[in-house]
Amino acid sequence: MPERGIFYLCAMVKEDVLALVDQGLMLPLMEEFYTIQGEGFHKGTAAYFIRVGGCDVGCHWCDVKESWNAETHPPTGIDHIVTNAAKYSDTIVITGGEPLTWDMGPLTEALKAKNLKTHIETSGAYPLSGTWDWICLSPKKNKLPEGIIYDKAHELKMIVYNKHDFIFAEEQAAKTNKDCILYLQPEWSVRDKVVPWIVEYVMQNPKWKVSLQTHKYLNIP
Ligand code: SF4
Image (cartoon, rainbow, N blue to C red; front, side):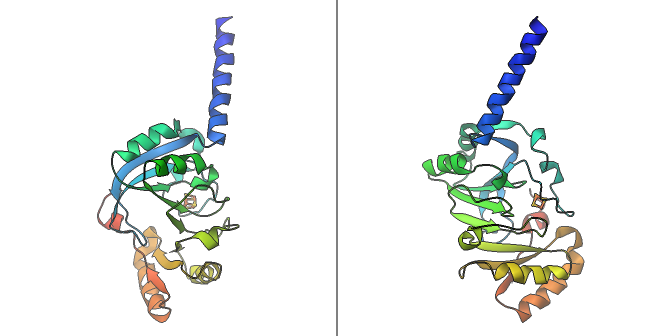
């Protein structure tokens, strides 16, 4: 019967797509956009952002909760993603969601093959994959980073929502490599309360630097 035939065909196609996602050859693409990196060491730098869907870390203050369910974002071939990205910038930021939910190897290899710089923003909740020019590690209490990412991170970006987050930030900083740049960044929804805490803390503990979400002040994505 034709309807049953279509059902089997769809099931087969879905399995094929899932296999490609599993191999990192397709990724659930939520959005991609050319903008200015607003945070951390590279703030002010034009960059092309690729936001990959899927995250089960569950931060209650997350401002991209719509990224969490990977199934709501279309599986997209990495060739397509890379071709788009290369049109705009030589600096590509992979963000999420949690990009390390997926194998970042094929995507970063394809970006590097075009001489593009690969940056990642990750909580480190899953094993590090991919080849990176810049790793921004932003650990979350719900699901701590594991393995070598503390050794590899170029910057540690700790989000401050409450006063306990300073203790958590110090615990995480103690695990990073000696060259890792340390940032404290206010969670946006409580910035008015938290910014004075961070300013005072950084003056008392100058190994830390302040990071602001400057793209939000600039009203750009
Ligand atoms: S890790 Fe990032 S994307 Fe995931 S819930 Fe936390 S803030 Fe949101």
